Length: 167
Ligand SMILES: Cc1cc2nc3c(=O)[nH]c(=O)nc-3n(C[C@H](O)[C@H](O)[C@H](O)COP(=O)(O)O)c2cc1C
Image 1 (cartoon, rainbow, N blue to C red):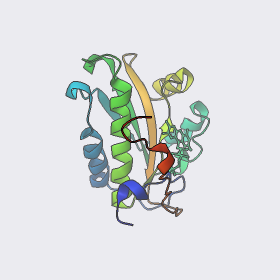
Image 2: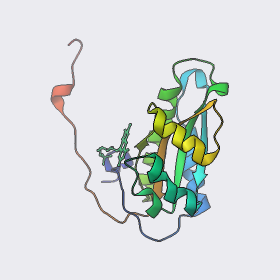
Image 3: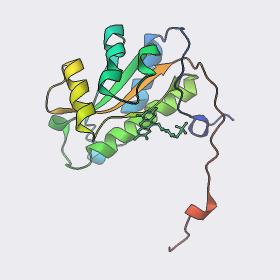
């Protein structure tokens, strides 16, 4: 299976092998290539390699126990000051997050989308941990590493969910 879209799975275990900066840049290039409303690109990204920060993440996110074991995590954020088409920033950031995950699968890296926004507690916890200003909202956290687990492509295609011409 060559298609990284179909091969992408949530990888929550990582090896100790380091992830190079050039790989991280590839992920960020893919994220920023995402479509956005009116091409507003309302995103900001924090690349977290600081072990003390990665270890503190589970204190502010209940389903992030894999983060301290990852070589790095990328926090996708929405920046209100970059928003020109209100109400679309979440969709833009979701597109960027998915692009990042697909690029990771293409490179053979493992990653998982950890939901943050719209849960205020998680967003505020990460704001405090990372010194993020109020006009920037943490949207999704993506731990990244070389896979320490293998998963088969999910094969979720369901013909019954497809409607032709009308419901
Ligand atoms: C909005 C969103 C939030 C998610 N939050 C978490 C999370 O907090 N922790 C986690 O381990 N996985 C999280 N996931 C990953 C899903 O559990 C995963 O995508 C789903 O089970 C399907 O499995 P797959 O990604 O391997 O295809 C999240 C995914 C999305 C899209």
